[in-house]
Image (cartoon, rainbow, N blue to C red; front, side, top):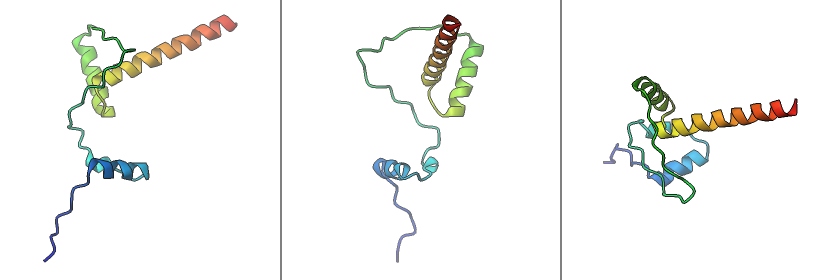
Length: 94
């Protein structure tokens, strides 16, 4: 009698399915632990103090996007710096 249990896909098989454009969201419950990135010489650690309210908002956004709080902060800071640079260039051109 054949087993009705499906074999679990490996990470490589899931990655290959994603590369083919298949929906692989069913393999991610959003409950995993974020792993730290590899150390880089061009990255410097900094400490930043946030209020509890800001942290709640950052955490909500991180959950919504299914990314780490740190990734949310990096994205928001990068976006703000880009907007400021564009505004400076426009001001200088006029």
